[in-house]
Length: 103
Image (cartoon, rainbow, N blue to C red; front, side, top):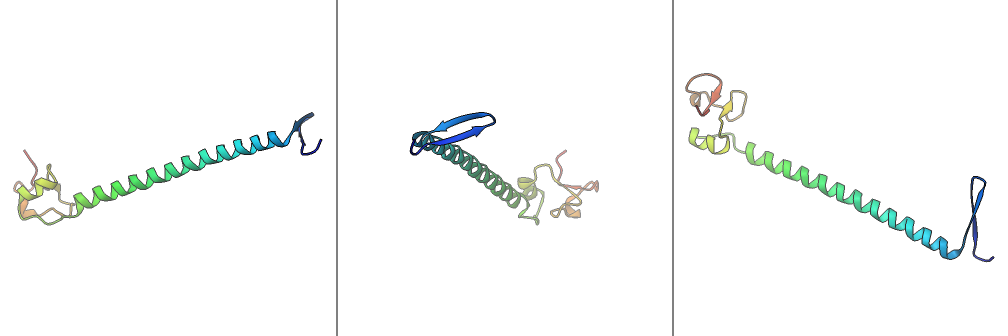
């Protein structure tokens, strides 16, 4: 037989013709393509999540100086703790370590 291949699996021999080889190669390429597509989708999802996280961080922490509690509460509705960069003691009326908290 010309163009045939014998594949030994243990004690069993499998005869592969050229046509079957082509089918096997096509199947392998299809599986590889699916694997590559899954990997690409995973990388894109991770990149998108990272970009969203960076955008959220820059939106909320971008401004650290506020003229009064009304402005601060637009960004931080529950006020800020004394270790927060936007904290100012003049905005902490009750001196409990939280500026502009809502009662």
